[in-house]
Amino acid sequence: MNDAERQKFYRNVILDDETIKEIEQVIDADKRKTYKEWGLDNSNGLLLYGPPGTGKTTLAKQIAKLNGYGFLHESGSRFVEKYVGVGPKRMEGLFYKAKKMSRENGNMPVIVFIDEIDSIGCKRTEETNKEITNTLNQLFVELDGFDSNSNIITIAATNRFDILDEALVRPGRFDKKVKVGLPKQREREALFKLFGSKIKKKSKLPYRKFAEMSKGLSGADIELVIREATMRAIDSNKDKLTPSDVYAIIEKKTGKKKKIENKRIGYRIESVSAE
Image (cartoon, helix red, strand yellow):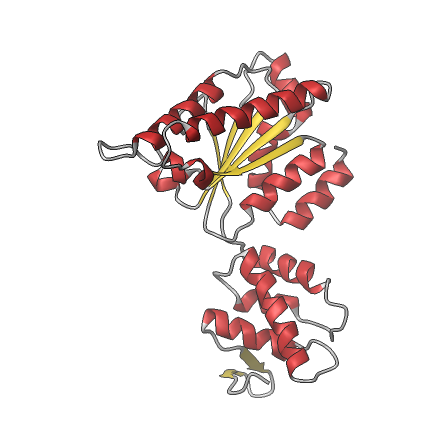
């Protein structure tokens, strides 16, 4: 991918610079080639972790699309079966399909994305379901079977990094771990602009003010704010989305009232009405 495409992509997914660097160390084809030339083994496992709604699944899909890689997506919960042997067989089949896709497309890199990896990868105890243990062991077989030249890159996502089995996150498996956290103010402003730009009927919206009010909201939350605010405007028989509609939904989500600065008197007052 060229620099222009890369910049456009990262503007859309709204990531900070450090997170971008961490991801590209695993994903970017040029970097992988350079590491190999220097004698480094490439990482083939990337773990995305963070709160719900921060865009981990969307990020994995968009990375594959941007780089022209193949993409296979499976949820960890689908490997949890009551019938013996089904989970491990399904895991083996997923990676077989990835290798076949790569071979049939000129050794094209393929991303295997496993969402909710904690469904099968939580810390094991004596009480752990044997089928889950066997499925996790099959994942280890697949991960350990790759060499540094492999074109299969495994990305996993979880909301619960703290409960993952140590064997899953050790070096050689998911050795690159990237936190996809809640957006900071600058990122929230960019997200409001991104989702607000899709609304065709709207007045001028103060995206910076929205960002200031919405600390603690995820990207998914912000998308929902714009959606619900637009529906509120429609239900109120307005001809366009207004700032008051957005303020009302943010207040509903966060419990915070909009602060209005009274420049003439020089103090801050709290709005009483959503309008």
